[in-house]
Structure formats: C-alpha cells, structure tokens
Image 1 (cartoon, rainbow, N blue to C red):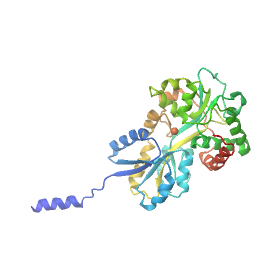
Image 2 (image 1 turned 120 degrees about the horizontal axis):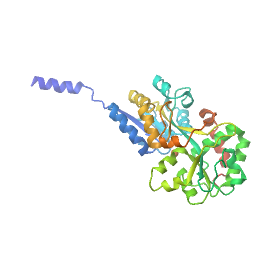
Image 3 (image 1 turned 90 degrees about the vertical axis):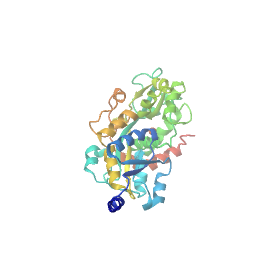
Length: 332
Ligand code: FE
C-alpha cells in the first residue's frame, strides 16, 4: 500500500509537461507537414501549427504576452519585417543558425532568419519565345512585348518586392516608367496566382509571365498541371549589369515564446541538413545552407547570379513600391 502511494506521489511530482512548440504559419500545410513529421520523429517534440493567412502581425500584437505562438513561419522579407516592426519578435543568438544561414539571409539584429530562397523569374513559352529573346527585367517594359505578358496582381507581395528591386536599381522615376511599360505590355488584367500565368501561356493568352521558380517544380509534379508547366521554359532574367531577384521564406521567434527552448531547437533544425533537403525536394526551393544540394529538377534549370541588392534594402523600399503600383493603377 505504502509503495503504491509513494509511486503515485512520485508520478505526480514528475513533470508531465508535454514537449511541444507552437507555430503560426503563413506557409501551405502540405509543405510544412513533412518537416513537422521529421522533426517530431527525431526529437519527440510535438509541433502544433496554426495557419494564419492574413493579419499575422495584428494577431500577435493583440495576443501580446499571452500569445501561445513560439515561432512564425512565412514567406517574403517584407512579411518577416512586418512582424519585427510590430515589436512581437525577439532576437535569437545561435551558433547553429549563424553557421547554417549565410549572413545575407538573416537579420543583423538576429530577429529574422531565412530558411529558403526563391528567384522571381520569367516563364517563357517554349513555342513562341526564342532563346535569348528576354534576358533582363528592364526588357519586360519594352514595347516589343506589347499584349504578350501575364502576371498576378501588382500588389501581391512577390511583385511588390520585385518592384522594390526595380527602385533599388533605377530610382522611383525609373521604376514608375518600368511599371507603366510593363502594364502596357500585359495581355490581360493581372489575375490569379503564379501558376495561373503558366496556364495562360499554355492556353496561348500570353507568351511570357513573371513568377517564382518553385511553382514550376510543383506543377511538373502534378499530373493535371504538368502539361501547362511543360509549355514553358524557365529564364533567369537579371537587372542590367547585376543579377536575378531573390526572396526568402523564413522564421522568427515571437516575444512571448512560451516554449522558447523547443522553439530554438526547431529553428536550428529547420536550418539543418534534413530540413533543408526536404525544402529542396518537396517544394523546389533553394536551400540557404551552403552545401545542401538543390533538387535534381531545380539543378536542371541551371545556374544564376543573385542580384546584389540586399533583402533589407528591398524591404525598406516596399512602401514606395506599393505607392508606385497604385499610382500607375497597375491592376486597372
Ligand atoms: Fe508562393
């Protein structure tokens, strides 16, 4: 009897706190799940994920110190900076993160960390666009493309970041002229996502489109979308005299972070070999960790030179870019 009681007491005294980490994610469930499964299998730490489509910063501000979230996973440097600027993140000092992530893809103040990169490139019709016919972003505003270009909304984060890069290279007046030229070349009003532009090329509505690299990988892997993806070729345009526009997906730790130790473990794990390989193979993104191979498909698209303008500079130009996009009524 005594022994049973003692055991029962011992069991009560043993902390039964579940090992877990809570993530607010702006990224698609099907992309994140393989990462979560692998992390939990390796560490025993459960990852609870809430998909937050809109208002990430507002939600974290409203929740304040009581937020259950430990980490935010999102795409685009501007979204990362929105939550940093809202004051809901905390800096993370980690030798593992510093070793795995090149300095260009993480914050000087340790508030955000890039996990993958993606290039914003040109999808070109295999049938109607010759090799070498489009080589620069500047070229997209050339009247030779009149009625031949498709793109998603100008106010989409990806296009805002690209426009910010145009400002970084050519100033606001130059970027405005570029937006006007590009708008004049559109085959139709901006509509849909990047995949829809590929489908529009396949349907003969336009000859070139602006989009992110990984969508082509995803489409080639989907029997229904494969034919559309096969109707285009990937072109890595550059800014004149510079390189191809890159953006990141990344992670930040919240200020509240109730499970800080597990959150740090998950961040470090996401920057490590296993996760970086999953990102490369399942979503066709570029791993940030040097030495991790890109998928065979992505490697087959060839090499490119990343643009030299820093992500922080581009994020700082986001407001100006959005203003110009609205001024030229890009979607109108
Ligand atoms: Fe995307």
